[in-house]
Image (tube, rainbow, N blue to C red; front, side, top):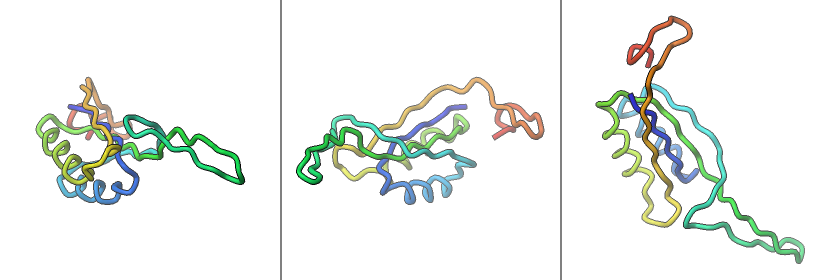
Length: 112
């Protein structure tokens, strides 16, 4: 099993969510996050004072999928979240040693 974390533009979240549920992702968690990478925040002027808005709002999606779903999930995110501009985001893939469903005690892929 793999944990996939994707940080994407917030404006692309609904499209990515629909596409991922369409390819069989059973569940996901989402978070509103702020950060910066190659695309730095900008300075804004409010009432004559300049403020450095250094962090850019993004949406983080986390999901755990089976090994055979990994490539399909990654390609779906790449296709749907891509605008071709700096700041489209990142995808991280990590190994998951075990999953346990609290309600039933099921383990492994059965717990997904």
